[in-house]
Length: 516
Ligand code: NAD
Image (cartoon, rainbow, N blue to C red; front, side):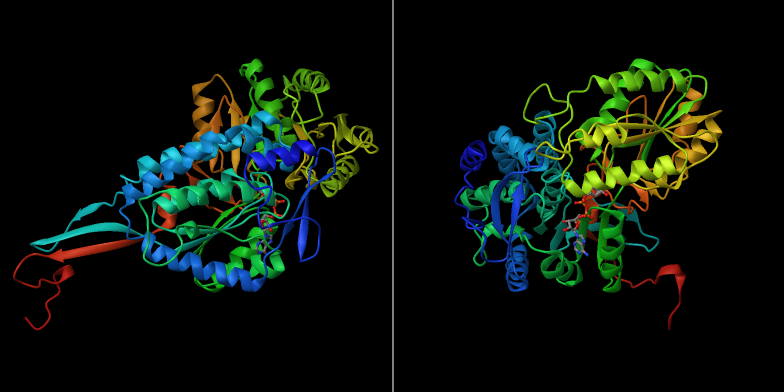
């Protein structure tokens, strides 16, 4: 683990007060999923420390909101620059702690840079509409104000990018963010937050009379029972942006609704690709392998179901089985590796359980399966082979409706587009979707209101790997939230409709006469 120590040193967090030389106070040990070895021990925050963090974030936001948005954007630009400087080291830390292959670790930090760049432009574009009033000499318009302090809860599998999507937009919109990361990836959180806080400390634009500029980007690392649940219930956090499983979203959503707060929920997916007979099969193969095997099937947008026309299903299954055999599994730092480990032993167990259920529900394992799991049992780390499972015609086994957060691909054979759509939309989740076809008509049907019911719908590209420019999120049990590009920034602001009477009379709307 010498390399890990050097990495933490290069990132300037090896002596961070949150890192403990050994256990002691309530703490957790961050583990490398590729080796099972401990990387560092992290002290956990208590409820009292959460309280103090909320007070600080709320206080500093009152000054931050007064800084003109383009100046806030300038500071976010500086944060993006700092991410650029540390991209390699941060990307490698993602690889070390979350097990993503290096290319994906770097890609994740690139997303932080991209959203910072996007936010800089946005800082001059927080536009509101103007309307023509029905009353003479009146002007109507809407404007957008900051919300306050945003509670941001993130999942292990995007330990940096999801926070950046939220906090860069939130800061540009005049908010502070209090981040509670997954306890599986605390080191990435500490390192990324340090990048933002370092800039907040050294920049010369925002020097509030009270409060610490670093608290625009607050961080709490604690157990759900001590910190997470309290955060969600706290009325001082007008918006809770929570990314994770549907199970978590159900709990968090209810608590936030109970206090009439706003929740932005980014939850699980069960993403499918439909393949029609006229598809370009070279594109299909590449998209399926990246979507189903990439990140070891641990993306919310991972391809979990492949719905293929019956005339080509056999050939495609055979080809994919062949391609799966050539995938290099192993050390995620090695440039030639395509699939790293699962995040922990429980995920391996969940994968095993899903394969057993699929077989019990009549499915056939084409590759991977239980032998592909057990072959790594006596080696360090949580590795497995990716699995392809063929589903019998005419049935949808219950296991295929769940999101198993592992590289299992279920292949369905269908007779036509209608049957494909029925299977496609027949799950509770609605995040990402794709169709491969050369027919404009079929593509448009897929994109139409009777087509995909997901938040993301692609033609001739896979389900996984969204760009920051579009709004990201899904429908149904995926939670309905939208983050990142397009007009997602509106979620971090409150809308105010304003009417100004510049005349000398007081006409009433709807022509109401009142004592006239
Ligand atoms: P998880 O639900 O176990 O945990 C996610 C986060 O929620 C963690 O920080 C956890 O500590 C916190 N949490 C859990 N219960 C809580 C509670 N009651 N109150 C407050 N906080 C609570 O998810 P995970 O295993 O870390 O991540 C994998 C899941 O996340 C998958 O389902 C995946 O699809 C989903 N995900 C979705 C998106 C998206 O944008 N839709 C992105 C990434 C991951």
